[in-house]
Image 1 (cartoon, rainbow, N blue to C red):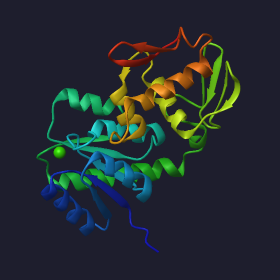
Image 2: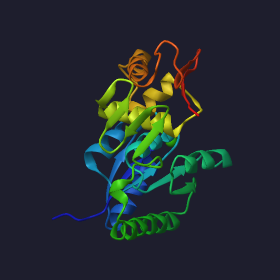
Image 3: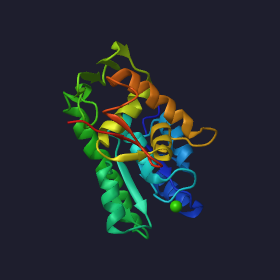
Length: 241
Ligand code: CA
């Protein structure tokens, strides 16, 4: 049995990634490297790490999009941002999207290892006295209501204009993204990056098709949407009273 804690290192600078992997391995962790945002999401899904070390400036999709994608499904996995962009704005952006800790490059290796250890300990403590975890879906709770609609994020169903419907995994993901960003315009590109974690071989038309469906489900008049509105040359915005 292998019960080593798994750490995913998302870092495109090879020498940094290799150095972290070596040191984490010496500490008794199992570590794997993802060199871009897309493989980071693939490994997060297939390898199920216990902690993620995440760089912000990455090829293909950036670290913040990776972070937001993960947080739509998993609010708990500890994420440590490791970035050269040590500006205050980046820090706030990261914290806003559910980063647990932040370390600016260049960093002290000793400090890095201590933080990793501390984050993993904290998670173990949460897990052992977490009774309501299963009931909670992210920050928005199980049920979400707007107008005459109600979405159940646990059962993946909705009570809406079309009656009771079953929502697909991808629909649920996008709905969570809209709810989390209520009142803020989201570009098609961002919706693809965060909602799918993938941008190649996909066109923004995919996003439009989902919005057509959401309007059919949730709008009284899909041609004059109240909740899922278009923002010309930007994308979409979800809002309600
Ligand atoms: Ca980088």
